Image 1 (tube, helix red, strand yellow):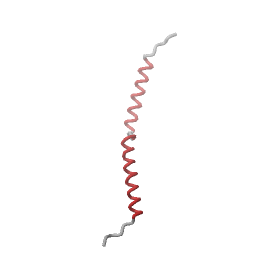
Image 2 (cartoon, helix red, strand yellow; image 1 turned 90 degrees about the horizontal axis):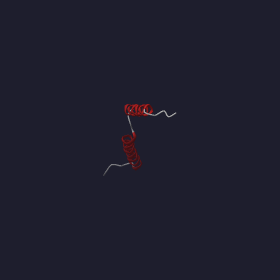
Image 3 (cartoon, one colour; image 1 turned 90 degrees about the vertical axis):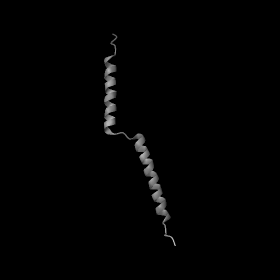
Image 4 (cartoon, rainbow, N blue to C red; image 1 turned 120 degrees about the vertical axis):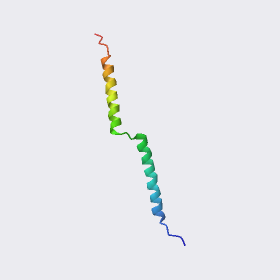
Length: 59
């Protein structure tokens, strides 16, 4: 005769695994490291400085 399986435990384990898979997908899609964020901020600030320096003063 086979082993007795608790279906509630099986169902909960399956739901937990699905949530973990969704979390991994979201981390890959939205997650950025601190270095990536700071590099993007530095590039944006550099572009702003260049554009501000190129403005004309029309008086």
